[in-house]
Image 1 (cartoon, rainbow, N blue to C red):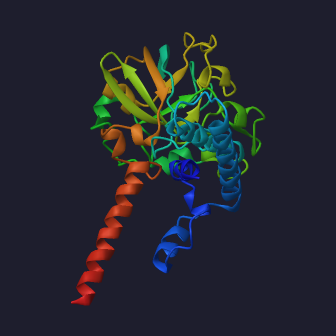
Image 2: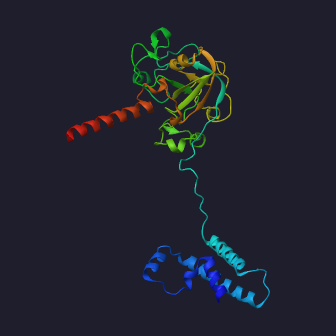
Image 3: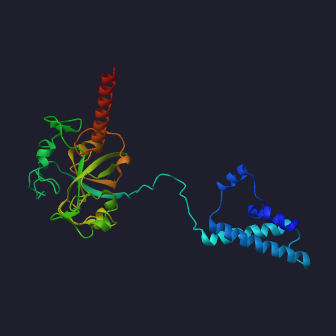
Length: 314
């Protein structure tokens, strides 16, 4: 019986045969009590362990000491519990994984602007965009590309009401007020950005554009050049299709051109980026469509409200 009690203590289930503890001891044990299934399994393991030890005392045993057998009994208990308790794997980081996107390299890049007239290699005027029927009016005017008529990446004649760092890529996720069939399947952020049927999840999306050792950021505001259906390039591994602009796969605004020092037709690299990965720069300064402008405005309003509240209390 002494050997059996040693096993009971070693396996951590001695409460099942102990005498009734005092009230304080009993309350402490109850706060850590096992589930009904655990207690049942523990008792079964204990019964088997005691029986096996008694058999050991009557015949030869592979276990040299009662302590060795106690370890074996504990292992049996753990294996039994694993059969009825699901394994739960806790992530080591509290932050979800962030989607990263590959660079599209050596992409022929051309310049376009809000209010551009149709003509030459630009078959469609830019008074409107694929997603904004009143693009020029909402932008605030004609985004004059002449360098002599610009200062600090914006036109001299007015302050844009939208981000002057904009771009166009040859895909539109919406047609006739409905998402294209492939859109939910090919757009990596579709599920997270979905706001309703026919509301583009590409409009205002940020990209990084790189030329040499300089990188700027722009928002996706229109579709082109020339195509609005080439998702295999925009979201996949295909190269841009041949077109009148030497196979151009990216249109950029005059502000992007000036920041990167681009020629009217040039070659750049680009990639999609999450908003939190957009580094500080002039692309954060303007626009009702600009995440950073809106966040700054909300912060300013909050500070004003807190100041007004504090003055009222005085």
